[in-house]
Image (cartoon, rainbow, N blue to C red; front, side, top):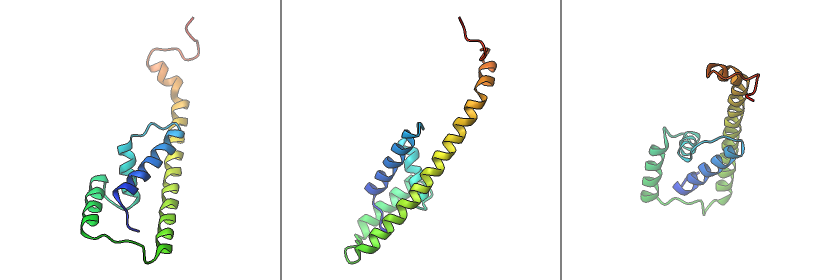
Length: 118
């Protein structure tokens, strides 16, 4: 599948929206990094440079085989969805651990978590 800078930015926006709905405060730049990793690039800057260069040097299109393009897009979306669900699962796990340890964190700060202040 031929990716474009605009399409990967859209993927990052979708990822950020999904994670925001899961109460995760992840930055757009972190989502761009995640989308780059999903697509097999080292990082966002590498992906951006290669996509920009490919767009300038070779305007490939799927006009001659639109079914292939649709299949590739569907496959990428499934991979992205799996990755997003894994990230959400990890966020939920971290939140659970924080909730479990909150009383002990409060104690470390000199706050009695079992007796609320009057």
